Structure formats: C-alpha cells, structure tokens
Amino acid sequence: MGYWIFSETTTFVTIVIWLGLNIYLFTDTLIWYENADSYYYTRIILGSSLAWARASAMCLNFNSMLILIPVSRNFVSFLRGSLCCTGNMRRLLDKNITFHRLVGYMIALHSAIHIVAHLINIERYHRSQSLDAGGLCNTLSYIGNHPNESYLNPVRRYETSITKETIVTLAGITGFIITLALVLIITSSTETIKRSFYEVFWYTHNLSIVFFIGLVIHGAGQIVRGQTPQSLLQHNLSYCKDHYNEWGETEQCPFPQFSGNKPGAWKWVICPLALYVCERIIRFWRSKQDVIITKVVTHPSGVLEIQMKKQGFTMQPGQYIFLQCPSVSHLEWHPFTLTSAPEEPFFSVHVRSVGDWTQKIITECVANRNLLQNIWHPPRLAVDGPYGSATTNVFNFKVSVCIAAGIGVTPFASVLKSIWYDSCDPNRAMKLEKVYFYWLCRDTHAFEWFADLLQSLEEQMSEQGKLNFLSYHLFLTGWDDNQVKHIALHYDSELDVITGLRHKTNYGRPNWHKEFRSIADKHPSDNIGVFFCGPRSLSKILNSMCRLHTSSDPKGVHFHFSKESF
Image (cartoon, rainbow, N blue to C red; front, side):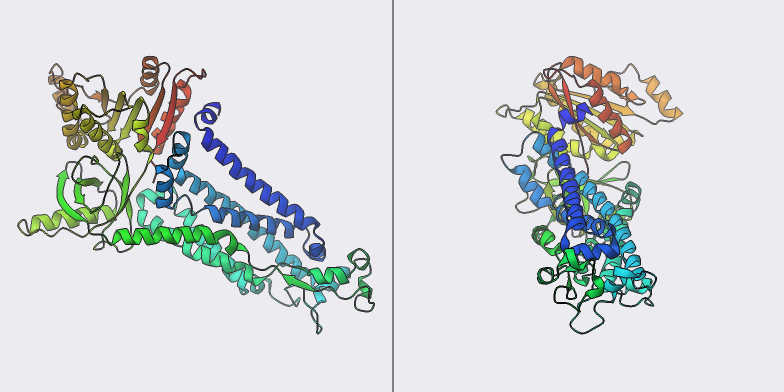
C-alpha cells in the first residue's frame, strides 16, 4: 500500500477526494432528510428509508455527472497534451478507463440502495392506507381525498396493487428501464464478455443513451413529497403534530399542503452530456474523412498489417486509433494500437483474428486482393484518433522497461521504430538512455513479423556503438519436440536459429524477480518506467515486482508501472 501511495500520489489523492465527496454528499443528504421540518410528516409514514432513498439519489446524480468524462477521448487527449499535464498527472489520465469503471461500480451500489429504499417506501405507503395503521399515519394518507387538499401518500387506496404502483407510474417505468440498462451495461463489461464477445459489450454500452434519458425524467414522477414552505408557515408543526384530530377544524392547524420534488438530475448531467455530444460530433466528423489504404501485408500467425494515409493525421509513438469498416458494421468501432512511427509516411495497425469482426476485416482485405490482383479495391475504413496511452510515456524516463505478451507487442513496435529513427538522426536528443524490452510468445511464428524491426535496430545500434542502449529478451513459452532438436543442433550458431538476431531466444518464462533485481542493481538511483501490454494475470505479477523492488529510500530506485487499457 505504501508503494502504491508513493508512486501514484495523484491517483491516490484523486480517489480519496472522489470517495470523500461521495461520503459527504450521502451523509449530508441523509442528515438533512432525517431532520428537515418539511419532511417530518413524510418520515412518519416512511421512516429512515426516505433519507436513504434521497441520499443514494444524490450520489447517483454526482457519479452520473462523472461517468462520461473519462471516456470523452478528445477531452482526455486535450488534457494530456496541455503543459500542466506531466508526471503523475499524465499517469492519472492513463487510468481514465479504470476510473470510469470505479464510477460505474459506485453507480451500481447507489442504484441498489435507491431501489431497495424505494421498495420499502412503496410498501410503507401502501400499509399506511390500511385501517390497521391508525392514528397519524391514516390521517396523513387520507389527505387529498377532499377538495383543496394536496396528497402526501401517492398510493391513494389500500386496494391498489403494490406491483402496479411500482411499475406503472412514471417513476416506476423509468426506474425499471434505467435499472435494466445498467444491469446489461455492467454485466456485458466483464473481461470475459469484452474479450470473447466485443460486439455484445459495444452494443450494450450504447444503452447509456437510454440510461441518461431515463435518469433525467425519472424524478418527474414526484413520488417523494414534502410539506410546502407556505404550509409550514400556516401549520404550526410543533403543536399540530400532536393534535392531528383537530386539523381543519381550527385556524391554528389547517390541513398541511404537500408538493413533490422537482426533477434535478438534469442539472448534474447537462454539462457532461454537452461535452460528450461534442465528443461524438468530432468522432462523426473524423469518421467521414477519407482514409487511403496504401498497403496490406499478411504476416504469420494470422496477423494482417494495414498501412494507411489520412490528411492531417499526426501521431506519437504508442498511440492508438479506433477503426470502423462500414462493409462489416456501420456501428462498431474497435481500438488498435498504431505500429508505425511518426517519421514514416503512413500509419499502420496490425490486426489479429480474435473474433468475428477482426476475421471479417481480414477477409475483406485479403479476399479482395487475391481475387483481383490488378484492380484491387480495398474496403473503406474510417479512423478516429489518434489517442494517447500509457506507452507514450516511455520517452519521459531515462530508463524504460517495455514488456509485451503475444500481440501485446504492437504498441512497442511504434516505440522501437521511433527509437530507430532517432538513432539515425545524430541531431536528435532524447531523455531516454536505456531500454529493456521483453517479449513473451507461445510459438515461433509470432516472432517472424517483428524480427525485421529488431534486426534493423540491432544493426543501427551496432554501427553507432550503442549496443547497450537497447537490451531485448525474447521468450518462447511453447514448442514441440522437432523444434527442440533443431534448436539444440544450432545452439552454437552466432545468430539465433529462430529470429536471426545476435541475442538468443530464451525458452520458458522469465524469472521476473531475478530480472527486476538485475535492473535495480544497474540503476540504483533512477526512476524507471515499466510499461506492459498483455493479459491481466501477468500484469498483477509485474505490478507486484515493481512494488517489491522499489526502494524505500527516496533517493533509491523507483519503478513506475503502467499498463495498456482501452
């Protein structure tokens, strides 16, 4: 915990402030509704469930205001590019999706509290209409049955079905729709659904439109009612509450008048919604810009490289874009890390077949090319971006450790290419002085498309006497008996039998404790950036290694862990 607070101070402070505001809003609203004179008679019927329903509603509005901001990609990119966004603040923006999830979980929590509280409220409203309730409860529930009276209890008759009152009313219908949309959004956001059925995740997330529309009009039902300010002046609460049998018979105790709360959720969400509408307009405008596919390259292991051009497109190493292919789907957009360098005359992505959408993209590109070689018509693509990611911070450290698993190497392709171009230009100065690159793959074919880049880097660094600048370690985690024999036969060769590089491929998985200890020993007083793209299980291991090997001495070595997340 100490390491996390030390290395993620800004993140820690932000979460503490966010949690503190939630606690404050909930507590302040709860206390107000428990003590406000205007809701004294409402509390006679409902008890504490009134305050719990209103306190949770307040926190729901607050978090609904925040939920869209982290996913406003252009706004986040604008903040990332501002002069004040450096160091911890930049790492905070890298966690925008994580914060989006946390806010979503908080919305789910307060939604559950709100729903349970109002179910209790409806039951108590209904029960107070019973003759068995007696006393002040009956008197309050019967107000509104005569002319010039405003009701307090929205359940007007005891014979009314509770189910009907819960669902058929405006508050009930919108509440049911909001809840259903929220359940679908949250359940489809699990890692399993997102990775295996991305289309389900994408489509259900668009139910957020339904969620916000329902949220804005939900309060129009005015289920919760309190005594009007004018009535409080005319109706002496301290006396009349004990003499309810005299209501309407004396001038001192007229029947109290009640009114519902006006809808207020729109005041919380109007600004974020306006920001997000602008975000969508920008994305739509970008989607209509022409994208020219200049080249399509088929790599081993089912990886397709698509090289493109677009007017006005500028990028930085490690950024990502969203792709849409209208011939596959007019609605779906999928994120891909850019694998080209800013210095190249094109931008590219590497697409691996991991689902229906990616398989269709590959089919659209490859099938058309093979069918008509001379008059090939590539599919139309729309591009949104580029957007910043954690990997763009590689160049902000003197020492960076880049770790990839499988196709997770794509963000580092752009980084390593940019390093190669920088090394070719002697006039360029970089803060980055040392790069450790680790790549874990299950089969030898996965190395093939990336080996050419590593060979170019190796040759360039050798010519300039900078062989120590880049230290890369390739790990093959799966192999068969024939490969083992072939590897053993050529073990003494100068170049690696798999990649053709000077650095030999390692077999099995790295001993991360040993690797991090070695790096810490070589850089005893540096801030080291650790950047990872790959499965969550390995991310947890690497994060724990950063925590374990970070020195408690402020002048010692400190590892700063970042991972890619879309």
